[in-house]
Image (cartoon, rainbow, N blue to C red; front, top):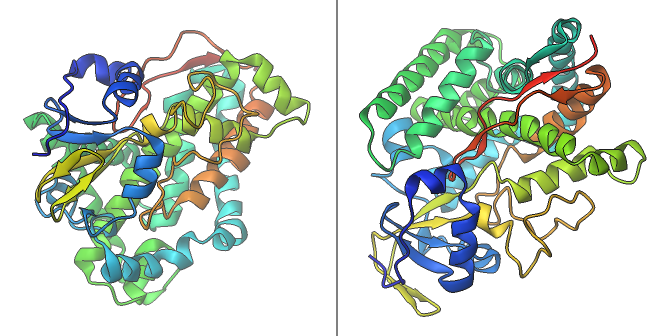
Length: 387
């Protein structure tokens, strides 16, 4: 392991709220080995911004990593030309222009249908009944797995996310992950002949047309689902909560002084849905006073970078008028989130405006419980509005 200073954490407390511990790490040991996670953590924004790009040292290729073992070797676990080839194959699906011209109308129709059903009820759990299906319906279209239900899509994503963060090796968590990947494979199999006979613009169809091996196609579909469901879901619900908890911030949007895009960018900085990205040390190297050995596990803590005091004044405060440009919520290097344009579209152009337009006098009836450090979001969010 690296010779970084050691920082112990209480894993339960870290899962409930990682930010106090991360603040101490930034101040006293910004590159630190955490035994409870079995990894050396980078916690300062500038270190992460620089080192994430050094793929020759901090490699995404992790043959024995949790994601590779559980989901297959997707493009997030590849570097260099191999990564770029698969990324280029998916670009026609995920490009900003394709999102606006092709996917956005499809996303809007699905979201309107969901709200048409919800609006007369006057109450719901905003995570389960709004954010979850809005995110899932968009993801069904993007992936091409149109036979999945929204609940199946969400459960599959959560199963894989939990599995990829299962550094404690809990067997039940791993079993749920295997069940999730098996379900996705079954839905891929059910669609293969259809997209081969009648190609469309989905990720399944486009990757096959680009000549990617079926093994890679399966792994990348799982990657898209693992990140494309839980992160928009959590950001939709979380940003709604943040705006309701800070009505003066919501008023700025109503007055035209800020936008829902500003609110999402600030939420992603402040309560990062993607809290961490893992790397494996490929060759011996030294950063500052810390020497890394081949095989060391490294975590780039995006959630900590978003609260780095060097770049953000009063970083624990939610302020949608602040400059979030230094934030690296979607990553900083060659593995910058390929689905960023989709996420911004679903969250800022569709879900948030729709919730505050159609659910009049929206109020939370209980405080949400947030959880997670590698991936973070609310578990539930009961709410009412004027039906």
